[in-house]
Image (cartoon, rainbow, N blue to C red; front, top):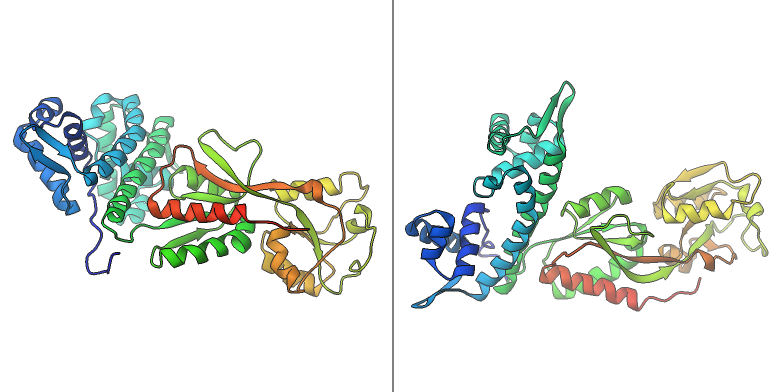
Length: 403
């Protein structure tokens, strides 16, 4: 494992050098690569030497029959092909000549301006001077032969082509970052990080168990757990900023470029504080519940849909509602007032087992909903990401409950 005495080698993301590298992997020849890339043979040799120097590893075995990729070379080649697989179609839509002209600094500037809709804010985001970012975007537009941003009085709006290229560039740069982690793993170094988009149930049930097991095997790999509305987490996943989401699955899947994997099914439960008037009563009906104030998830969430359906036939459905996915807020409010809560059973299981909340005796088996992992389609995880994902799936396969 990495003892911390030397940093993990980093690819400097010279796209042209990476294209040269891939051509050598394919042709096994500096001469053929020079001809294919319209370079001199010394320029090809220098490009390869620079990448090997940056990575501090040997990417090719030199033989009389040609150059052949080492295992490290194969790792880099796989990720680089995937990166250009995202990037090149978007570049070709603008102009095929951009393949050999585009730089990572231009792509990062384009992404930042697309997100910030302002050159000054984009420059601050990148830690660069505003003229530097403006020049990078302007130069790219000149090379593309078209305008990619419409300058409005209120800001800068990306065109459809700019939006497509920014998305492709994000995924391409994410693949190159994954390459660095793969190479570190090949050297028995612990590198990279795992970013999880966590919906409420996962934060209280799935993630603690998976993290505890993961830390036994990977004690230093950073874990970032992001919270937020499903739509925001999904957007981050599709941009390559989040590795995977854990929580209630959507039916149908939200969009075609993601896939969902089932972990287990869960039901909702109606909970109350220990001193609530309904605690201890049997044969409760929706009408009994409707007169009390509630804490429930926001409109559009799977739990909220079940909650609304519970009162669909009631003349006077609940009118006093606090919208929140916070279990802590729900627990504290129910302890102090006559509010009721509608929540995932597994999310509330710890509070129920400790006697902090009481489950009302309602048959809610019909509210069973699938809980799972959402990933980008064709995502290729690093070893650490795959390990964590496997632990999450194992947690799901051993989950059982009786609501």
